[in-house]
Image (cartoon, rainbow, N blue to C red; front, side, top):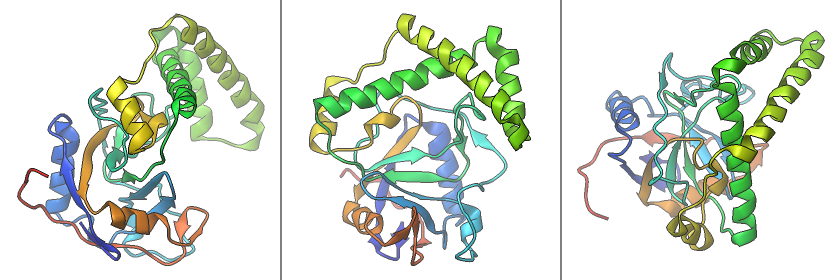
Length: 250
């Protein structure tokens, strides 16, 4: 992937075949050529893949567009959000309880280095999200969750109290669920990687990781460091072209 700041070489994982095949299809279609990195957060991620960014005015908000399909989640315990991981962007659980991925948008993790305390905090966030996702996918809470989704779909100020009430009820159920469900714990090798190489540890188990950068992380670091208005680079940073190359052992 050639960008305004240099070349990034990425390896797609064979453990996430739906995401791999979709990405290969898009690259062959030259979908990513000329797209912006529209969301850049230093020490976290750089994000691209919004088709609206190809011909974009600087005052237009980006990040809400993709192609009209989703990719089923392929969360894999062997793949985690270490520095350089490719992560499939997605909508949040309240509008996407199956955690399906965007058809086109993805991030590259720049991340940060953790210690045991910050890892434990990230792990707590993961288990809270897993408990909430368990609740909203249980049949006995289907009606309540559908009410929440309908409010989100047609939200107006008059619905705010009802939204908060339903959300608080689901959050309370998730707190109870958290006490009884099996907890996720980082494998020791993942903990050591987060404490040395770094990453975005709080995203594990909730997003699909489908590959990694094998060369060019200095380019990712340069993009992450650009001047921004919020999370949008002030000066456009584009993918010039994305192409498939023969897989090598790096």
